[in-house]
Image (cartoon, rainbow, N blue to C red):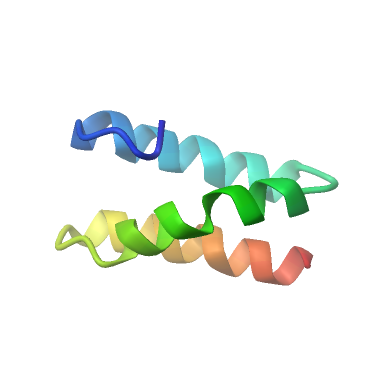
Length: 64
């Protein structure tokens, strides 16, 4: 879902992923599977995409 070309859908998917990584006990398989897609989104020109993507990445780094 985070790869979706529809910006609204992709943003909601990023919010969902953020909730998942915050509350999941073991997220290592998810982190390796979606790093490339997150790095693409962080370069997006919309500020809210950068904000949520950075929150996800920081949460992943704290859990590793």
